[in-house]
Length: 123
Image (cartoon, rainbow, N blue to C red; front, side, top):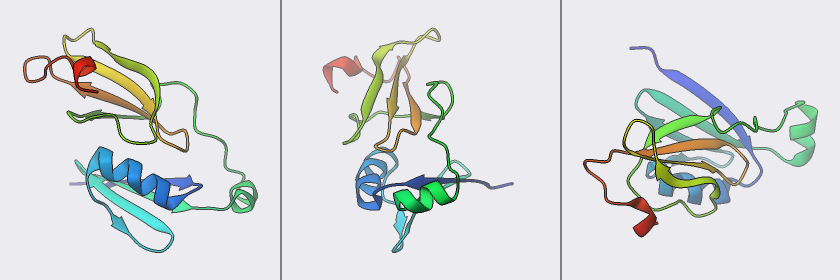
């Protein structure tokens, strides 16, 4: 099985760890990196100063909610989330929400209708 890797720059590793530990469960942390494994995808978050970010010519994350990650998720909104689209009925019959992490990376959260109650009541 091929393992996919995704690398992202973050401004504050501790803030990102709080968000991603709540969203994905505990990750592995070193001094300048966070690492999470989800369904064959390895996510790496590296802390870069604003100067390093500029030196690497890194652009801001894409603004479209559809460009990001999708995750089956049954918990509360992670701390530090910016809600783009609150929980609503999805065309496929479940629930979905779009959020940004503290650095602007987008996530689509999904819940199956048969196994979940109205997430608006629990979020």
